[in-house]
Amino acid sequence: MKNKILKIKDNIYAVRGIWLWHFSFFPTYCYIIQNKKNGEIILIDTCGPGSSHLIKEAIEIMGGKTTDITAITLTHWHQDHTGSICEIATMIGKRDKPLKIIIHYRDADFLISQKLRWLNIHPFLKIKVCHKPGKLPSNELYELVPFGNSNNNPLSSYGIDFIHSPGHTPGHSAYLYKEDGILFSGCGLSILGKKTVGIVPVFYNRKEQIESAKKLAQMDFKYLYPAHLYLNHKEISKDKRVACNQKSFINRIFGSLPLFKYMD
Image (cartoon, rainbow, N blue to C red; front, side, top):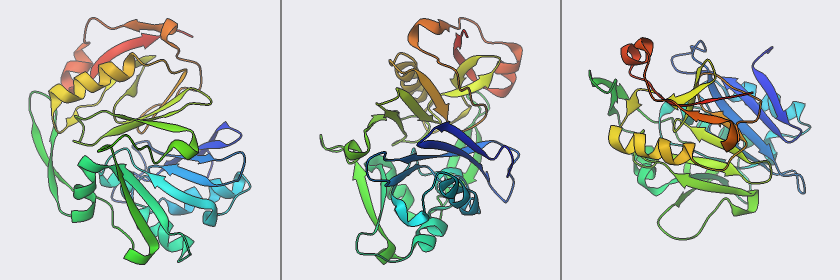
Protein backbone atom coordinates (compact mmCIF):
# COMPACT_ATOMS: atom_id res chain seq x y z
CA MET A 1 0.00 0.00 0.00
CA LYS A 2 3.01 2.25 -0.40
CA ASN A 3 2.07 5.81 -1.40
CA LYS A 4 -1.64 4.95 -1.05
CA ILE A 5 -1.96 6.08 2.58
CA LEU A 6 -0.53 9.47 3.51
CA LYS A 7 -0.30 11.04 6.95
CA ILE A 8 -1.25 14.72 7.05
CA LYS A 9 -1.54 15.18 10.82
CA ASP A 10 -1.64 12.70 13.69
CA ASN A 11 -5.43 12.64 13.38
CA ILE A 12 -5.79 13.25 9.63
CA TYR A 13 -4.88 10.84 6.84
CA ALA A 14 -5.34 10.89 3.09
CA VAL A 15 -6.11 7.73 1.15
CA ARG A 16 -5.38 7.56 -2.54
CA GLY A 17 -8.17 5.26 -3.59
CA ILE A 18 -9.55 3.83 -6.78
CA TRP A 19 -10.93 6.26 -9.32
CA LEU A 20 -13.45 4.40 -11.55
CA TRP A 21 -13.73 1.05 -13.32
CA HIS A 22 -11.07 -0.41 -10.98
CA PHE A 23 -8.46 2.08 -12.24
CA SER A 24 -6.26 3.99 -9.79
CA PHE A 25 -4.02 5.87 -12.24
CA PHE A 26 -6.01 9.09 -11.74
CA PRO A 27 -5.32 10.25 -8.16
CA THR A 28 -8.55 10.37 -6.14
CA TYR A 29 -8.49 11.03 -2.40
CA CYS A 30 -10.57 10.25 0.65
CA TYR A 31 -9.69 12.16 3.82
CA ILE A 32 -10.02 10.65 7.30
CA ILE A 33 -10.37 12.95 10.31
CA GLN A 34 -10.33 11.49 13.81
CA ASN A 35 -11.74 13.48 16.73
CA LYS A 36 -8.89 13.92 19.21
CA LYS A 37 -11.24 13.83 22.20
CA ASN A 38 -13.53 10.87 21.57
CA GLY A 39 -11.89 8.98 18.68
CA GLU A 40 -14.89 9.35 16.38
CA ILE A 41 -14.02 9.40 12.68
CA ILE A 42 -15.52 11.33 9.80
CA LEU A 43 -14.63 10.69 6.17
CA ILE A 44 -14.56 13.35 3.48
CA ASP A 45 -15.56 11.43 0.32
CA THR A 46 -14.91 7.72 -0.24
CA CYS A 47 -13.19 7.56 -3.67
CA GLY A 48 -14.51 5.12 -6.26
CA PRO A 49 -15.88 1.59 -5.80
CA GLY A 50 -13.37 -0.84 -4.30
CA SER A 51 -11.56 1.71 -2.11
CA SER A 52 -12.93 0.59 1.27
CA HIS A 53 -10.06 -1.80 2.04
CA LEU A 54 -7.57 1.08 1.75
CA ILE A 55 -9.71 3.29 3.96
CA LYS A 56 -9.98 0.49 6.53
CA GLU A 57 -6.22 -0.01 6.54
CA ALA A 58 -5.57 3.71 7.01
CA ILE A 59 -7.95 3.83 9.97
CA GLU A 60 -6.17 0.88 11.56
CA ILE A 61 -2.82 2.63 11.08
CA MET A 62 -4.32 5.59 12.94
CA GLY A 63 -5.19 3.24 15.80
CA GLY A 64 -8.93 3.18 15.09
CA LYS A 65 -11.58 0.81 13.74
CA THR A 66 -14.13 1.13 10.98
CA THR A 67 -16.84 1.13 13.66
CA ASP A 68 -15.38 4.47 14.81
CA ILE A 69 -16.71 6.05 11.60
CA THR A 70 -19.80 8.05 12.56
CA ALA A 71 -20.22 10.08 9.38
CA ILE A 72 -19.24 10.44 5.75
CA THR A 73 -19.50 13.96 4.35
CA LEU A 74 -19.46 14.30 0.59
CA THR A 75 -18.12 17.09 -1.58
CA HIS A 76 -20.61 16.05 -4.30
CA TRP A 77 -22.51 13.12 -5.75
CA HIS A 78 -20.13 11.80 -8.46
CA GLN A 79 -19.25 8.10 -8.23
CA ASP A 80 -15.50 8.67 -7.93
CA HIS A 81 -16.32 10.40 -4.61
CA THR A 82 -19.27 8.32 -3.43
CA GLY A 83 -18.38 4.92 -4.85
CA SER A 84 -17.40 3.17 -1.61
CA ILE A 85 -20.25 4.38 0.63
CA CYS A 86 -22.07 1.06 0.46
CA GLU A 87 -18.89 -0.95 1.11
CA ILE A 88 -18.01 1.12 4.17
CA ALA A 89 -21.54 1.08 5.63
CA THR A 90 -21.73 -2.69 5.14
CA MET A 91 -18.32 -3.09 6.78
CA ILE A 92 -19.55 -1.13 9.81
CA GLY A 93 -22.84 -3.02 9.98
CA LYS A 94 -26.08 -2.25 11.79
CA ARG A 95 -25.86 -0.28 15.04
CA ASP A 96 -28.01 1.93 17.27
CA LYS A 97 -26.89 5.13 15.56
CA PRO A 98 -26.68 4.57 11.80
CA LEU A 99 -23.88 6.03 9.71
CA LYS A 100 -24.59 9.63 8.74
CA ILE A 101 -24.24 10.46 5.05
CA ILE A 102 -23.89 14.25 4.89
CA ILE A 103 -24.32 16.11 1.59
CA HIS A 104 -25.56 19.48 0.37
CA TYR A 105 -29.29 19.38 -0.25
CA ARG A 106 -28.84 20.40 -3.92
CA ASP A 107 -26.87 17.19 -4.53
CA ALA A 108 -28.88 14.94 -2.21
CA ASP A 109 -31.53 14.10 -4.83
CA PHE A 110 -28.84 13.13 -7.35
CA LEU A 111 -27.39 10.69 -4.81
CA ILE A 112 -30.75 9.25 -3.75
CA SER A 113 -32.08 8.82 -7.29
CA GLN A 114 -29.12 6.61 -8.33
CA LYS A 115 -29.78 7.72 -11.93
CA LEU A 116 -27.31 8.28 -14.73
CA ARG A 117 -26.63 11.95 -15.49
CA TRP A 118 -24.76 13.84 -18.19
CA LEU A 119 -21.60 15.79 -17.30
CA ASN A 120 -19.87 18.47 -19.38
CA ILE A 121 -16.16 18.09 -20.07
CA HIS A 122 -14.12 20.97 -21.50
CA PRO A 123 -15.46 24.56 -21.45
CA PHE A 124 -15.42 24.94 -25.24
CA LEU A 125 -15.96 21.42 -26.55
CA LYS A 126 -18.56 20.58 -23.89
CA ILE A 127 -18.21 16.86 -24.40
CA LYS A 128 -21.10 14.96 -22.81
CA VAL A 129 -20.18 12.04 -20.56
CA CYS A 130 -22.63 9.84 -18.68
CA HIS A 131 -22.01 9.45 -14.95
CA LYS A 132 -23.82 8.08 -11.90
CA PRO A 133 -23.58 8.24 -8.11
CA GLY A 134 -22.12 5.53 -5.93
CA LYS A 135 -24.34 2.72 -4.67
CA LEU A 136 -26.17 3.40 -1.41
CA PRO A 137 -26.40 0.80 1.39
CA SER A 138 -29.65 -0.63 2.71
CA ASN A 139 -31.79 1.93 4.53
CA GLU A 140 -31.19 0.60 8.05
CA LEU A 141 -27.44 1.19 7.76
CA TYR A 142 -27.43 4.94 7.12
CA GLU A 143 -29.14 8.26 7.75
CA LEU A 144 -29.07 10.91 5.04
CA VAL A 145 -28.30 14.37 6.45
CA PRO A 146 -28.75 17.14 3.85
CA PHE A 147 -27.38 20.57 4.74
CA GLY A 148 -27.45 24.06 3.26
CA ASN A 149 -31.16 24.90 3.44
CA SER A 150 -30.91 26.39 6.95
CA ASN A 151 -28.30 27.88 9.27
CA ASN A 152 -27.70 24.49 10.84
CA ASN A 153 -24.24 22.98 10.33
CA PRO A 154 -24.26 19.18 10.90
CA LEU A 155 -20.44 19.22 10.85
CA SER A 156 -19.92 21.65 13.74
CA SER A 157 -19.24 18.86 16.26
CA TYR A 158 -16.33 17.75 14.06
CA GLY A 159 -14.85 21.27 13.94
CA ILE A 160 -15.67 21.59 10.24
CA ASP A 161 -17.36 24.38 8.30
CA PHE A 162 -18.89 23.77 4.87
CA ILE A 163 -18.55 26.16 1.93
CA HIS A 164 -21.15 25.70 -0.77
CA SER A 165 -19.21 26.03 -4.03
CA PRO A 166 -21.55 25.13 -6.91
CA GLY A 167 -20.56 24.70 -10.53
CA HIS A 168 -18.89 21.31 -10.65
CA THR A 169 -22.28 20.07 -9.41
CA PRO A 170 -25.22 22.10 -8.07
CA GLY A 171 -24.43 21.17 -4.47
CA HIS A 172 -20.66 20.87 -4.59
CA SER A 173 -19.17 21.83 -1.22
CA ALA A 174 -15.69 22.31 0.20
CA TYR A 175 -14.84 21.82 3.89
CA LEU A 176 -12.68 23.87 6.22
CA TYR A 177 -11.14 22.03 9.17
CA LYS A 178 -10.79 25.06 11.41
CA GLU A 179 -8.27 23.77 13.97
CA ASP A 180 -5.46 23.42 11.42
CA GLY A 181 -6.73 25.78 8.72
CA ILE A 182 -7.08 22.97 6.17
CA LEU A 183 -9.36 23.44 3.18
CA PHE A 184 -10.58 20.16 1.71
CA SER A 185 -11.63 21.61 -1.62
CA GLY A 186 -13.11 18.59 -3.42
CA CYS A 187 -13.19 19.55 -7.11
CA GLY A 188 -13.65 23.22 -6.26
CA LEU A 189 -9.88 23.80 -6.43
CA SER A 190 -7.17 21.44 -7.69
CA ILE A 191 -3.39 21.57 -7.66
CA LEU A 192 -2.68 21.38 -11.38
CA GLY A 193 1.08 20.97 -11.06
CA LYS A 194 4.10 23.31 -11.00
CA LYS A 195 2.77 25.06 -7.88
CA THR A 196 -0.38 26.09 -9.73
CA VAL A 197 -3.92 25.94 -8.33
CA GLY A 198 -7.02 26.12 -10.50
CA ILE A 199 -10.06 24.20 -11.68
CA VAL A 200 -10.56 21.06 -13.72
CA PRO A 201 -12.64 21.04 -16.95
CA VAL A 202 -15.61 19.04 -15.63
CA PHE A 203 -18.68 21.03 -14.72
CA TYR A 204 -22.42 21.42 -14.38
CA ASN A 205 -22.31 25.21 -14.78
CA ARG A 206 -18.95 26.69 -15.85
CA LYS A 207 -19.77 30.26 -14.77
CA GLU A 208 -20.74 29.11 -11.28
CA GLN A 209 -17.68 26.85 -11.15
CA ILE A 210 -15.32 29.76 -11.84
CA GLU A 211 -17.08 32.07 -9.37
CA SER A 212 -16.94 29.41 -6.65
CA ALA A 213 -13.26 28.67 -7.31
CA LYS A 214 -12.38 32.34 -7.04
CA LYS A 215 -14.25 32.52 -3.73
CA LEU A 216 -12.34 29.51 -2.39
CA ALA A 217 -9.03 30.93 -3.62
CA GLN A 218 -9.60 34.06 -1.54
CA MET A 219 -10.31 32.16 1.68
CA ASP A 220 -7.99 32.36 4.65
CA PHE A 221 -6.78 28.77 4.77
CA LYS A 222 -3.24 27.50 5.39
CA TYR A 223 -3.27 24.12 3.67
CA LEU A 224 -5.09 22.90 0.59
CA TYR A 225 -6.11 19.28 0.04
CA PRO A 226 -8.14 18.67 -3.13
CA ALA A 227 -9.95 15.51 -4.21
CA HIS A 228 -7.84 14.84 -7.32
CA LEU A 229 -4.44 15.22 -8.96
CA TYR A 230 -1.55 16.50 -6.84
CA LEU A 231 -1.14 17.05 -3.11
CA ASN A 232 1.08 19.64 -1.45
CA HIS A 233 1.87 19.36 2.25
CA LYS A 234 3.40 22.83 2.53
CA GLU A 235 1.59 25.93 3.67
CA ILE A 236 -0.33 27.86 1.00
CA SER A 237 -1.47 30.84 3.08
CA LYS A 238 -2.89 33.96 1.37
CA ASP A 239 0.43 35.81 1.42
CA LYS A 240 2.00 33.00 -0.64
CA ARG A 241 -0.54 33.13 -3.49
CA VAL A 242 0.07 35.05 -6.70
CA ALA A 243 -2.76 35.39 -9.21
CA CYS A 244 -2.35 33.77 -12.63
CA ASN A 245 -3.11 36.19 -15.45
CA GLN A 246 -2.55 33.91 -18.43
CA LYS A 247 -3.44 30.39 -19.47
CA SER A 248 -0.75 28.20 -20.98
CA PHE A 249 -1.17 26.30 -24.22
CA ILE A 250 -1.60 23.09 -22.18
CA ASN A 251 -4.35 24.71 -20.11
CA ARG A 252 -6.20 25.69 -23.27
CA ILE A 253 -5.88 22.19 -24.74
CA PHE A 254 -7.21 20.45 -21.63
CA GLY A 255 -9.69 23.14 -20.59
CA SER A 256 -8.28 23.66 -17.10
CA LEU A 257 -8.16 27.16 -15.63
CA PRO A 258 -5.23 28.24 -13.40
CA LEU A 259 -6.13 30.79 -10.71
CA PHE A 260 -2.99 31.29 -8.65
CA LYS A 261 0.55 30.09 -8.10
CA TYR A 262 2.03 29.58 -4.65
CA MET A 263 5.49 30.13 -3.26
CA ASP A 264 7.33 27.82 -0.85
